[in-house]
Length: 233
Image (cartoon, rainbow, N blue to C red; front, side):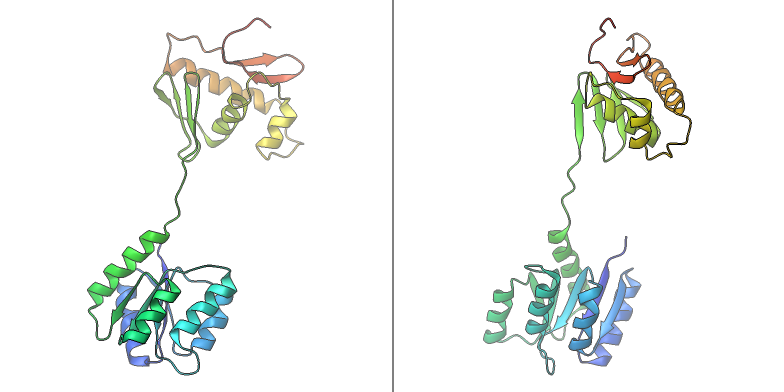
């Protein structure tokens, strides 16, 4: 997904030129020459990245950044300052914990490289939820299922069912409970769960014919449960 970049600078010529170059690199760009207008706008619609000029009338770039962080409830935001740096401005940059800045005039290639570098610091860490239940491995992020190292292609509905059952071994769930899990209308025939379970069993048997798949037990008049090992009912 393309990152949304906002440029805040009172120099209309620079804003126009920079916006065109960023758009040519695939970014979604919004631009403002009035920091107050930009502050009001981004308080409601935050961008993914901000390019901010330090020297602006009425509201400086540092003040704009701090106020936006406060309004959005963030300690810091991914941003890059455009500035003619002196010692005072360097201190301001350190106080705001900005990752980087570029000095005017600047090379667009350098600016683009620094944008990517700063954005990488703010990339969310995606924790893959992988569960190992006996010889069954489930990865919720990838909707991946392995049985005795054999990958089984499941539909999202089938994956939800087996994941829900396997993570709660020996717990019997009625067909209506499983329908609720799948967010199905309760008026739907409950026996649709039987059809899903039947298809799941076939896929497991086909993936590893030598291993008898008897983990999903049918509890007649009650529902279904996952049993780690075969047991007598």
